Image (cartoon, rainbow over all chains, first blue to last red; front, side, top):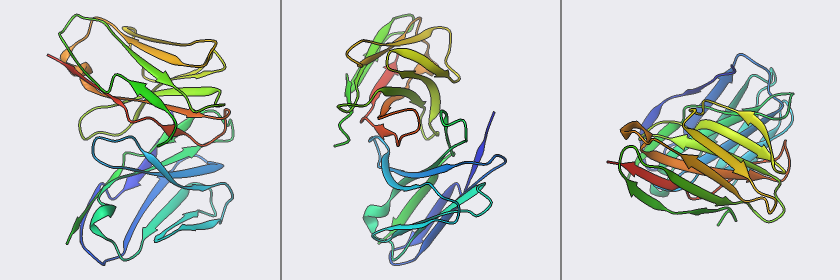
Length: 111
Length: 112
């Protein structure tokens, strides 16, 4: 089946630093979604991308749909303590049905 | 608040028992998904329903089953529970087959 490789698995950064994480796939996707999960909560949708090359921002978050359609990136600028959590990428292929999730990036921010 | 409601929030039971987890999707959403998340792990897709019919199946054990009712709520049944079934079980819904998923807050199952 399809697999999404998300990296890094974890990051421990200083407050104020920028963060970058990515997902890569062996398959082409036509939708990329980025979610954040706070401890003990359900994942919350941050950004949705529908077009190759698309660059979308949501506050301090910016995500890009890779030109090859096999990857996506999420950047967080000027991190703050409440950015702590697990970030998941998810991709949907041309069949349109299945959404495949990456393994997550655990972000820890030191005040 | 995503609009997806899951009950119960917490459930503690014993090995060999059977439990039912319930999910009410967002108003108007036709598709319901179930995911399992073990401690510090990713989201494992279990099963998807669309307008009452099963649409996709992931790594769902034979001891587990689900259904979506005419009012679009869904139930996930877990039977012959084992210690390893302890996990967070999330329900998500989307408007259609290709829409964005919105997750509930999860049901935390502990099997002792």
